Image (tube, rainbow, N blue to C red):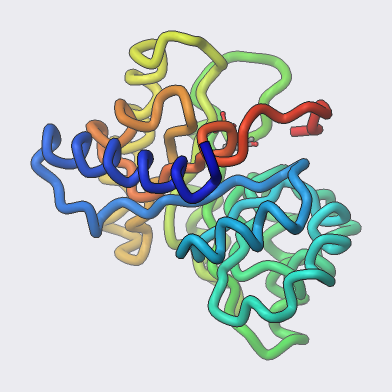
Length: 232
Ligand SMILES: *Cc1c(COP(=O)(O)O)cnc(C)c1O
């Protein structure tokens, strides 16, 4: 199977999940998660029509991006945790930062975006499980953080993102997806731009679509298994 075959198969699966959920295909974006894979894999996906990509490390993407300068209409999002000393570089390299979980990071991104004369869309990552290792904001802290970010001029919160605890049973993730959607729906009254829900990966994206995902982040089912371990 080529990357193009995998993308086509995924579009069919997304279509079917949307039908089950009574949703239109256009409500669900497919993000190709290219972390650990070389720039050639991104070029191959691009040639097959893919435009939205997710990377989880600033340094890794900076190196790859040198080979991607011709992809003018591709969009790259940072979906991994961001250290404060990499915020300036991240604001330069990425079209959106999808895993913000602190005011400090949002403020630094705001300053960096302002200096670049751009507005940077961000998603707030929420941690809905009690796992020690996961990044993300506790749900009870969300209203305060959203209000604080609202006062920043050059970042705009457009949605929420989550990574449920890993399981090979997709149904295990459903309650987490449902919780994220509830948080989004509750926040919408005060923050009308907060429309996006980034949730669902290779093993559980169909369930995520049933629960309202507007962006599924797929790596393995497009690019194959990652050989190297990837941080985050
Ligand atoms: C790696 C990664 C993905 C993609 O995971 P797959 O299981 O390979 O589809 C999605 N989201 C985040 C945050 C990731 O780090």
